[in-house]
Image 1: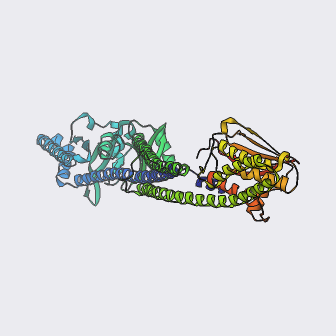
Image 2 (image 1 turned 180 degrees about the vertical axis):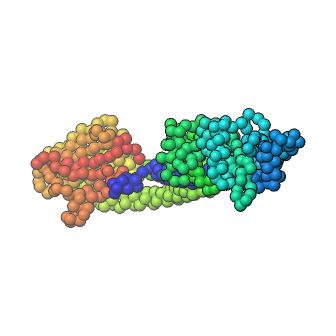
Image 3 (image 1 turned 180 degrees about the horizontal axis):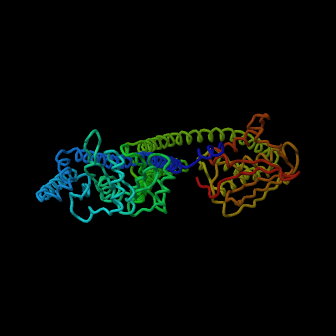
Length: 594
């Protein structure tokens, strides 16, 4: 982790901004998906509760209708007109003996039929298919259609159960699975001699498919509702398009009052409960695949929208990051350009003068800083030129008096020792040297001119030392036109003669060798025999480790002079070629012009 964070600090600005943007996008993406899942979970719970509430409402509707039907039968069997007409219809012996009784019987039958029809009309919203009234010698129906016909074997069971229920309503569920009809039977009784006597039995028929369909028509989220009704744990009604096996699977999977179940490869939302008045259990199923597909479609749509939002956010972040990075890269390029050449003010291809944001302020402040630095450089450059010129004048003043003294001493000595011709030659050379030193010669003559000065100097010294002094040149003609500071070579030749002939009384052979090096610098070697430099002589002079005397000052001045002009890379180097030869090497930049 430490290595990662260390490496992260060195990431480029573009990488840092993009990484931060991607991290934020990722966090927002995770947050969005977690929030979406939480919302979908909450919506699913609300959906389940809404569906459960809707199914419970349908169950309440079924229970309400069944209660209404029971109440209707109670009204029927307690209706005085119904009882009176049933008593009339029950007097079978009178009808056979009195022809007028037939008319009364028909009138009573019509009256009962009209009453049944009125009740049927009043309670039609409870999905009653028919109301039949059975008495000892016949029956009357509210709806004279085939549907009101009850098979004799079923009718016997129905009336028997009604007789055994002491005038209370009894639901007959035995024939729902085969005929699809649910029956409600109830005896109409009167008290006679302190005993109940049955006048007739009312039987109400309910078409269960239509009854269930009407009660579940308002259920949400589904076009088809499957119902299963149980009495004492036995299934007695099942809607079409679903089988008993699926209901059994639903029974085993519904641990709570509602939930999602899978049966025969299909998913259902199921609800189980009990009809309070009748004690019947029910299971209600609605297809969940369509709902699930709608939810999945919503999830896919939201996922696509979030993905598009992420892609668009990334593209926007990339463009913004690219723009910011380009601004900073232009600033870095300007800094690098200015660092390479401080005399030039870098120019950006983009104009930041009208930008007032932080990046624009950085660019404008850098441009101002560069201008100020350039002004300071120009001022310091002029000051440095003046300072260098003063130092050169001081160096020349140190060299010329010493040289003039030696030359005059030689002239004086030679004048006493030899004749006019030599004196003439020496005097001529001396005049040339004096003009070079004290006259108006160029500050940076060519190498060729400096070599001529050396030859004039050696002319004087050869007259003085005769055969003890030898001189030769091996200089590449291509470097004769280069320029170097005035009086650079002559003091080094003078130093060689002094430490060889004057102090050691040895013969002196001097050679000047000049050429280009592999790195295109110019090297001038002044090689003299019978002399040795002490190790690291210049460094010791610079650090004051040895006390300069005589020409030690001149060597150090030449070195500093060259470095002031050409830089620390160039200057004077002193070393020993072997045990017999010392070398003073001058290094100059190639193609030096001043």
